Image (cartoon, rainbow, N blue to C red; front, side, top):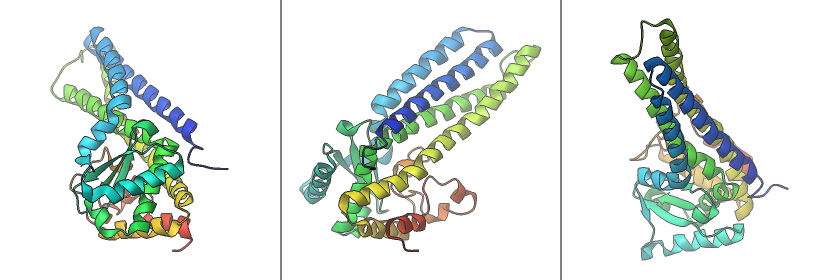
Length: 295
């Protein structure tokens, strides 16, 4: 029988695969650099860089995500009820109470982050707290706790950092070609340059595809698990409808962290044409239909 913990081991494997793939991609790019410029030390630098980035992605990615979202701890007396809701649902889910954060933003949204349940974080926008009633807020909270229970926040949070660094390295390589460098007169060096440019172009695309493959499936799973936790799928369905009805983007919407949120932080205007195809979230209509069977 499926539970909040059914996909834990699968998501841990995904994380190791993601980190290993990042390591291999960076080392390959470093090898191309080293051969093209005739300097083996470049490969060593890229090797060390890939290890450091993996360590940062695992140990510090939650702090990076919180910082990027502009979140602050929900410690004031006005957030006592919110903390109580989170604590009660965490007890029901058999999880430690995650740290609760607030994002000062009128757009209703929420996300979870952290490398495991002991270091879990849930963040809510002020706009979300204003438009949702208690049942709806419980539905959103249960959704985020499901991400923590399934440990897919580990995959998603690591992806925030690694995808960003893959794009940075790729951009560095392309800039080095624009502004000169490398042995272009040497045939082998020229071939390596072409391979390096191809890798640099594919790297950010690869990073984006990782995020997309993680997000869409995990949102349906978290919706189902959250509904199982509250025993009231209508609450989450109603919350999703209210969130999508707002339509406008968040003030600090980032491509790197978009997949962490319960709904697309760029608003409905971004869900047109190709943007809809490459959205990090499935359509709200499909999610509501999966929860309560209505169009």
